[in-house]
Length: 382
Image 1 (cartoon, rainbow, N blue to C red):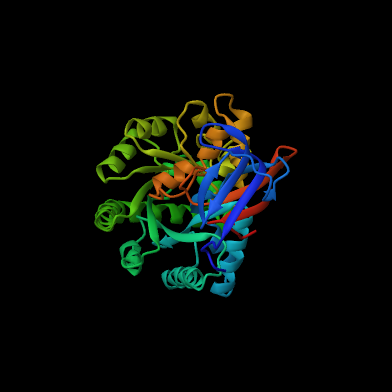
Image 2 (image 1 turned 90 degrees about the vertical axis):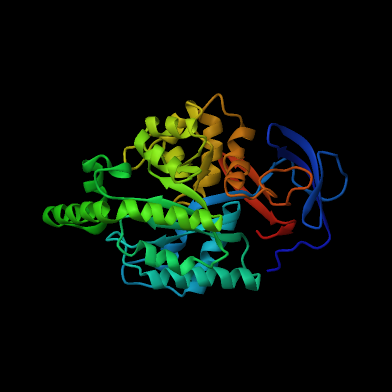
């Protein structure tokens, strides 16, 4: 699938969602770039008065791994896994995606560092062959408390696909799992641990965090700064966590778990990212602060699909419906313009002259945005 558009495209009779308003009219594309917005046209593809929004820009999705390892000890062909993932991503309106790849393995997974590298290679092969609908990059999910974190990171030192690295520590009793009841429910439910097994797991994870987390954070931050990789801090819960992130040069606050951490992140000038499932469900599955509460406090900049690709688009519409101070244009910015800016993609993320012609044609039915057509650089991919 050739990602470079050839020829012209005109989309007419559309409700065009711009950065600050919704207008009716047409959009013209020349060579994959927007050349006119709003001018009525009698020719072109008639969108029947439906919405036209920018293609979504996704910074954090864990979804690829579920295609490759759909069941314990089951492995799918990596090329087929990437193709299936890509199809679902594009059908969800996402035209630029940062696929999450684990760096640093713990007891929460049975995949290996070698398998993660194989998946990254499959992404590169698909992109180079021109058979992917969305544009794919890599987001390294760095588990700083894992013994092999730096060795795994070294596998990507020369990989141009890497755009973002998040520094995370899922040690029980902190950050995402400050509530041990929530931690117990999650891990014992997922891993089928007995009480004794869970207690041993907690003890080992805490010891690993003390031993590795600090030095791994510092080493990863230095490596990312040297290579121009954007960094995110994952699940910050306290002002001290945010201060540590700022000291390391981190720019994105990914899933802050408390209002305190979100406020500190805003004061530090960090972009605040929350999950689409949290917004759609009305709360965090771990019992942490809700995305809606952050939006109401004007402490939300980016929405990500996290573990459900379609939740990204759905969450933007849910946000506009739920919070009076957030217009549809502003909500769509949180899944397009704002994540594009945070990741350094300055050529996309809004419908404006000179920007890439990445579009989603959709209709809202029963409050749910239904994706009808998707274009990337003016070429239809869905």
